[in-house]
Amino acid sequence: MDFATYRYLVLSDLYRLHGNVQLRTLAKELLLGDSFKYIFWFRTSKYTRDQRLLRYLVYPVARLFQRHYGHRLGIGIPYLTDIGPGFYIGHFGGVFVNSRCRIGRNCNLSQGVALGLANRGSRRGVPTLGDNVYLGPGAKVVGAINIGDNVAVGANAVVTKDLPENAVAVGIPAKVISFEGSHGYVARTDYDSLIAPPPSKTGRAKTDLAARRGTHADP
Image (cartoon, rainbow, N blue to C red):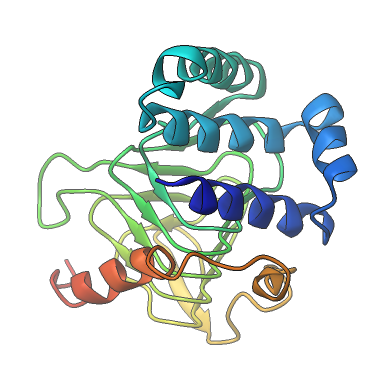
């Protein structure tokens, strides 16, 4: 990861939260914020690990802060997890993501969300989330499940099979009840007009999702 990509990711995350990318907003979040602090140090850990000088000077500090806020806020997302720009954690507490998961652009995770590994069966593996996905409080996605773009998953839902684009799914196991999508739940996604995206990096998670669609039959 280069600095331009790191900057883009951090500022896109900030924009999702506040609708601006001002330095004073960033400073306020780092001093007084909650979940954004974790996301910032998550991004910083991943960036500094790949830089020869920063790996020894900044990376250990970034990892220390990420662990600290992870324990304090109840968030467990390994710093090597592939997460696109505009990442947003609405409420902290009980948020856990497997390091092999792939999460697209502008995804919202609520408190109690888990994205986990299935070790056996037809869904062995980890979830892949597309762009503009909303996961409500307590939602669980375990195994090699593909969640399409603009999907909304309701509170306490347990997703056991792939969800197509624009689906709204609720229940245990989660069932699609409409195709109204995540509109209204995922906001402030127009940051590319303010922050120039690194062209070689954007859309990777979406491409990975498209490549994996259809590779698992419904159980």
